[in-house]
Length: 405
Image (cartoon, rainbow, N blue to C red):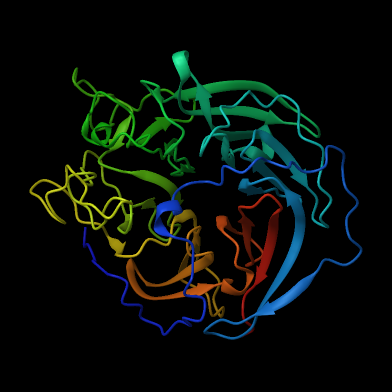
């Protein structure tokens, strides 16, 4: 694999008028403010959805506010009928109609450990959703004595409730603390599901193969372990592991052009990075990093930015944008955004667009700075439009129409 190390010298000139962005110390920490909650009953859709135009390198981008009043929404799945399925971190899942009507919370959602960055996290449609109506979702699950860990379940989606909920994955062992759960879910189109996680803010766990913290795991769709996973058969390693040495992966996507899985993870203070994880590879945290502690001190375990047997990041930011959510924009011939990679930025309160030439990252721009909102998730629709969630007490679901031409 070719690795490209880019250290935030942006390929495109960006406006610096909003220099006072959120401090790195909060870059990878979800808001702990008391959740206000969206209305328990369905709200009436506005007759006209509010819109505004924002600037980009390629021209004006039309931004439409589809829905608001969501309590720290974490993930959005695009349903085939043009509606949406949205998770709220405090533990609710809602339907949102194409014209913006927000449903009451769906029944059947398992209890989640909604503390700190924990709660109800990612949601995606199963590969056979059209026939099965199955979804996959991740959440933080309570353990004994104040511990918690990342879990993934599947369920059948109904009009007002989930049914046949089955947990297919548990992070083991569960640990104390409210931070670094990850977690995103991606299918590889070959019968496998990838689940990203965090190291639960316990740095050494990322390097321990007998623990699932700080690991990207690969499972069969039913939660069983594929026989060709890199550590199958090793008594000193968990067979679920695909790659390790990760910090807090809140971005995961499949490149439809190549079938490769890409992930992005939070650094500490500096050092957010993108990787294209390969089986059995060690991505270095906390031994190698481009970041430092939030206190300004060196990471105690770090030896520098490289070490034998550890992979270099594919792309790195010296100043952390606070990455969450990732989506490829490809196959849109004629669009000025074709062959792009989008990532949400929490600390930078923006939507990052990376220009791609094959796998090579050739440029970067930051969109939606005018909104001054933490961007938690980003998805690309079959209609060629981009959908994002803002992480706020009054969170919003937005639609972006690409620049004309």
